[in-house]
Picture 1 (cartoon, helix red, strand yellow):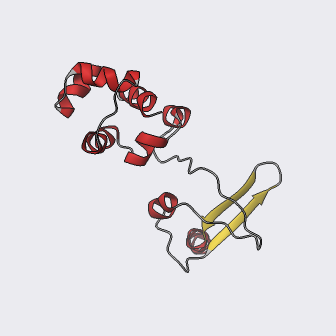
Picture 2: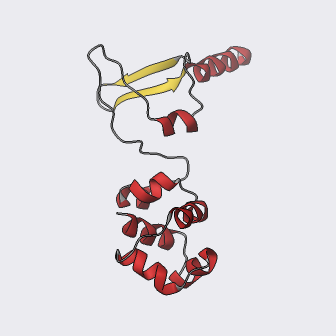
Length: 136
C-alpha cells in the first residue's frame, strides 16, 4: 500500500521521481523501488515524505490510495467506528486532534434520514445563533 501511496502523492504534488529523490537525498532508483514495492522507505524517509506531501506518516503508510487521490485539503476520511452496546462511539484520535476535541466537549448530533448523521461542536451553533441574534 505504501508504494501506491508514494506514487499517488508524488504525482498529485507534480513531482518527478528525480525531484522527490533530490528532496529526500536519495537516488531516483530508490524512489522507483519504493513505488514498485521492491523496497520500503525507513521511518526517517517516511517522515520527510509526509512533510513534503503535507500528510501524516500514518496516512502515507496506511491510507487507501483512493482516499489519498481524492483527498482535498481540509476534507478527511477517518475510517469506521463501531457503536457500542449503549450507543457510544469512539472518535478516532486523528479526528479529535484536528478538530480540537477534548473530554467534556459538547457535540451536537445532526441527522438527515437520506444523508446520515453528523457531529458538530455545539460551540459553533451557539456562535452562529449569537451572530444571527445580533443582526436582528
